[in-house]
Image (tube, rainbow over all chains, first blue to last red):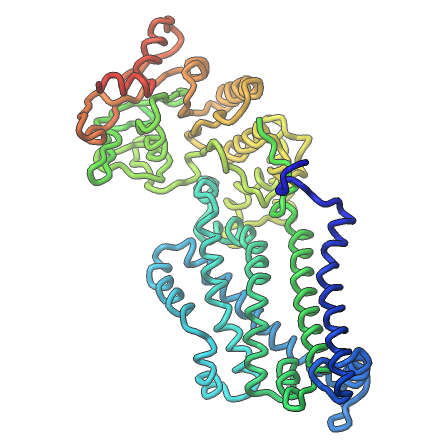
Length: 276
Length: 262
């Protein structure tokens, strides 16, 4: 018998093992839900699957009686727009400041300590300031996402620039590159796939700040809806919304990974770093 | 007239002397090989020629003019590793030097200029025997092919000096022999002036027209870094007998230095 650490599941077995915890959670949920509903058929805490289906039907496929919009889609578009703006602006800031800080000592001397300090401010603590400065509209929500994740991306990319072997930067100079040309032909192309990594890592935090901002002040959005229906203990709406947010986050992460693999094959390597 | 003139150059870091009293004249077309124990400053010397490190005292003249104190297109370099750009394909790696030179804003060429650069790069790659892998990324190449690529990439700029920092150190012996032939051919055909740092004494004797041995002549047992290394042997090659080779081997091996101290 091999050691436990050397035992590897075969592929179908591994996939089966991967699905197993989900099935167990589902079974436990159904059992608990049945028990509660048997005791009190009006229980709202653990709704049955029938109530989920009707809630999803109501939220995702029928226009709202009050606004005429289909709520799930309206919420999704509102949230995704804020998220895309926030993450996009953060990526741009991250790329610019990361390159400048990582490559140019004269710029990083004044900028690095500032970025490090800013990144330690708990973003939620300054949400009120954002509401005061930008009002309760879209700008404050986007700003919260930017303040939440941009410092992380800046610092991560600065580190990635520092990790580019100095040999490459020197080589580029011996080929006649100015600082600008080193940036556009060496640093920038090597940094884009690393930016995608950084964005993937910060997406979780971006969702967190988005939903927090929406929960506090919004008129539509996934976070807004979840916190709105909480008042009615509408678990039949909250749980599908949470599942939907999770699904969106997963799709974003997976498509960024795929995109990066497709555009930057050299970054993901083909495993053949031959020697000799 | 000497092409490169190293005049009483020292390199010190606070209490740590790396090189002392370095004076050297090198003519155009020489193939200078540099050996010495680890940590004796041979790479530091190469970095000074490159402009990555500047001398603490003394000066280095290239063609009568002080050497620029940052890397530039007049001095090409091939490192032991990380000499080629992983994000560019083989052809792109060699074209890069031409693109950077001719397009100062985008660093890219288009149309006829691009075709011309491609053609030049292809000829260079032909010369180093890589014309069959133009469309591959460096990570798909063997170590030897990556070093060939690094050579082609540097040489397309027609540098005045070619600096080689243990370029064949990571290669297996067969590949190394091929690379020796290649570098000798390129050196002769292109009239290059070469400085090569090497761990391998045989290789240095075989390739060079002149061998420099770096070593410390003064030792302070209380403070290992009190004195720097100098050129202890400066040998024109071609007429060397075996005993000298053994003597150098003996004195430049780290074991021997420790033995001397005791």
